[in-house]
Image 1 (cartoon, rainbow, N blue to C red):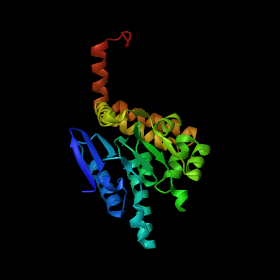
Image 2 (image 1 turned 180 degrees about the vertical axis):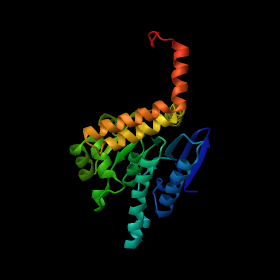
Image 3 (image 1 turned 90 degrees about the horizontal axis):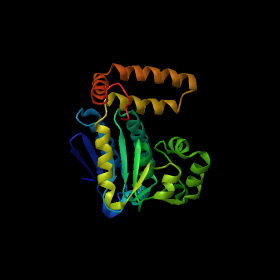
Length: 256
């Protein structure tokens, strides 16, 4: 299978499994990933999805050999799949983590940026080679990248086609954490398991609120925050957590 799908307790893993071509993606791979996004969404036992790759790459993006043989209709299908993946990742009511184990280029970087959290191995390299080949980004990247790193850095990355080190990507806010290569799977699992311990409704509403705030004005964002936090307050899981906290810490200083 080009993409492995495995579950470990409440964590699902989608792993690109074409290391011989640096996990380059063709239409069937994109269709598989979209299906796995849907599978993780529909499975109530899954609380967090982790996306990663085998070998020396997370994914180098489009399979150039396959692209060279595409008709314009097939190319349009591939572009539409990247956009469908961006919508599916955003609408998934569960956190999605990208564990970036090597090269994340072009469409591979687009998929990493669709995820809510990104951890990168120290040897990871991230960039957009689209301009070198005469293409422009898809998969929502122009929307996402500007909001993550600002217009100046986003345009510099896209127009110059420079490849960033993991440390550079962390410095500009493209990834949240850099870890040693050998530690990446364990650290991604630790983060996923940490999120699994939190009430699901709160995670869902945090994700929704932050994404919608990117598209809203201040007044609409304030109203949305109030509605989501009230929804969290009504959640039985949240009420249980409050009771457990008070039982453990009493009503005094919560840090004691």
